[in-house]
Image (cartoon, rainbow, N blue to C red):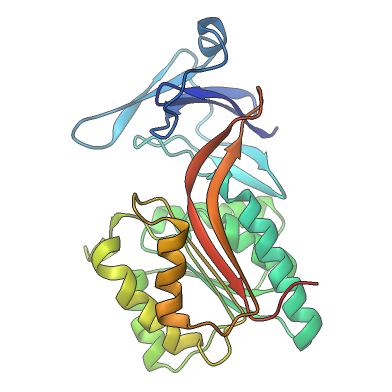
Length: 287
């Protein structure tokens, strides 16, 4: 059972999550749908967002509490939440391939597994990609429920024995402690939200907290940083803005860097659904 984006338009998207078809919000889908109403009417569940935050699902046929869906090289446990999330971000699939290539190249060059830090790691797609390629990963997210979810994803991918540290922690607080411990990492992955709260009710806003967090990450890794992936879904944080922000903190000691728009390919036609931005870089250019 795999993931498919069936259609998008009028601020919505129609997705197939294995055997279950759902309709959710997609604010960037400002065009008209390609499929007709009958096709959209096949959805088993429609998510409605509340003006006060969150929302609810309306189901024609109640799905299982959770089920597995193939997305690229990963199997992901899907579980619809009141906020409309389902546990996977299809736009990250391309980044998982890049992570695996960066880890593989590091091992071939250094003859050891890289130490990789994945912040705001959610249900662990990037953690799985790095671990499968041979990295030692520290997975950090402030929500215990999603860290438990990520561990289930490791299990269904036969990676429950991989060298992963599963940390339930506020990302900024964790990085500050790692700086004091003089820890070092070879690879950094982070996908910060626009707004969030830590496990002790710490408030995160990307405008106020991303810069200081990157300063801390520089102390953890600047002398040996091999690769960096920074992605986000916040308005205004375009590829150019992210590149220049990364340049501020990590300089230009990289042979290879690029950035762009994360997208999800659509089944019908040649459309791609815009779903965030990224900048990424490697110390040594790929062959």
